[in-house]
Length: 295
Length: 312
Picture 1 (cartoon, one colour):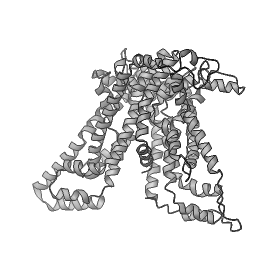
Picture 2 (picture 1 turned 90 degrees about the horizontal axis):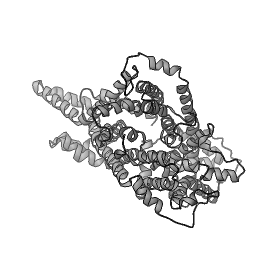
Picture 3 (picture 1 turned 45 degrees about the horizontal axis):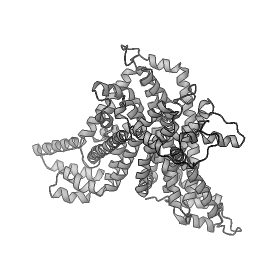
Picture 4 (picture 1 turned 30 degrees about the vertical axis):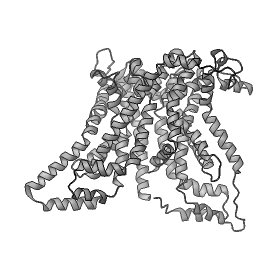
């Protein structure tokens, strides 16, 4: 994919010094590199370990002049309390429906539009594609106020459709899938077309089937982004029935900030589902992000 | 694309008369049927609100009161509002620190964890990437508590090193660094993964050739790695800038924009004016300023992608 035509020049630009013996020496030995890597990883996961360690301590041991990481007394009482106090099952369900609903609808609608833009020849195609590109550049925060008012007119505040539908199509998704569909050789569908298959049939049985990796990558993005989003659920839900894990916890913190054990157990409960999901599909996750960033 | 289009057009031209118009109409209908759901949603939830926001920004609308057309009143108010300029400054400060620090750290970690023969490479990468998958709003809760002097380790450890224990989040000078640290923490692993992908596209032969020519490690980095990662660096810089200018989540959780508005960003200001003060007209005007800023960065991005399309 990458031809990098200018590299030979780059290498010549490096002053060749034949008098010097070839140096294979690295700045860091493998041992040091490993040490630095472990240190970086520990620093990064430290806040998550710290909050977990504290969430299983009794309150009296959290507030202490000499905080240690782990305590000798282990208690689950913070979790028992937090489960009900934040109404974890409700928040979890809301988040699954919101993130899952957006992901499924958006994949369906985006791929349909992307198919039309990549494969069908019709008047107005370029206008629509430019429209998608412009939308791609708009920060969604500009629409916060009017969307809130519009959803309020529709009586859609505090509803699943109010949370999901405004996000059910996504300019990045359309753009991303269009680029992917363009890279699929046309010959594969021509046979189906000659056999008289409808466009929808070709979209469904040929193009979608060949695009499973791209759809998975995009789905992962949509799911993660919406699962973690704070501002949008904060605006759409004006009472606790529709809070998601992010917005529910953020607002819970505002009211219970001094009940440390409770807040800590609550945030661990909110973080765990995504961490578990990540550990299960870890490879796919990082590879997806790497490829979508560059291609 | 253009070849097949002309070929198809020629085919259509050969089929004459009413039949051609009929197929053309059918093709048009098919195409729009495919796009219907997306177009309806975009029209209702993207373009209609965008127009409504433009109209709102020309009024003094508040959720409860009557609304009056005030022309460019909100925009002139903006230009004379020290709060707006302060928040713009805060946002720029946040972006100006978060972006370069994240990028340098991400590149360093990518170089480190892309080494062949490094044990536990996968686990280390996963650990560093982990913050990218957790909710920034929720992860900010432990950070807020860690910065709380009565329980927090950060103030305790700094105190052990002889640095006076202070309430970071209560300080107008230290609260911003605290939310910046959290912003960097969230994204550094994400950028690292993009850098690792970039590093893996550089052919090994380049390094071997350079080594035979006697290039030192530093020279190989400066003259091979860095230039060949130019595209990756541009890409990461632009997405980091755009996301910095939209900073909200950890600030909402950790400081609510305080103390004394020292961590209030533009998006925080939109939220506060629109949904706490209910100055929705004014909030819409600020929204359009944000559009202008993001558009600028996005155009840079487009130019970059176009340039790349020529090069590869």
